[in-house]
Length: 204
Ligand SMILES: [Zn+2]
Image (cartoon, rainbow, N blue to C red; front, side, top):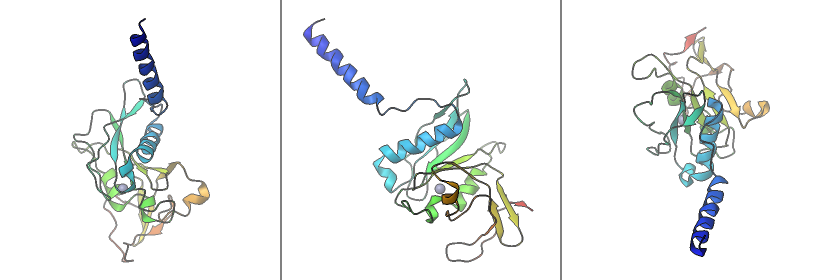
């Protein structure tokens, strides 16, 4: 090997090492693991994550594993447009809220799904047949999962959202969120006005 080829090879090895120390696995053993990896990737590597949302489809591969689809930056601080059309094999959607929308304050509104997020997750796709689970990467770093059909209503104002904490929150911390999963709470808007219940709500 010439000295020049040797130097070139060393450069390639160095680059590979530098890249592999940050690289994510390309597929994951579960949908939850893929969603958690998406949130970590965005929050740790995308400077824009402070002030805007990011979103992606979590896609099932033929071998039973899951991968992160194209990450959309077509977004602002309150919305993110998922890549269209919904890809074949799409298993879930995932989005982040800007980390500045609450930081580590677990009581901030941005730490949970918005009304629009719940409604969007109930969307049954272009053929009207299949709604998919939705993941949220919250400002404090925790990851939540809402499965379609997970909203129940009781009486004139009570609503219960049955979402799950996938990672990043203890049971005690979960109780501090503005929407506590699995608990009946009144449905008010930010100004304290009662708002109509969503039509996808299951009446109890
Ligand atoms: Zn959201």
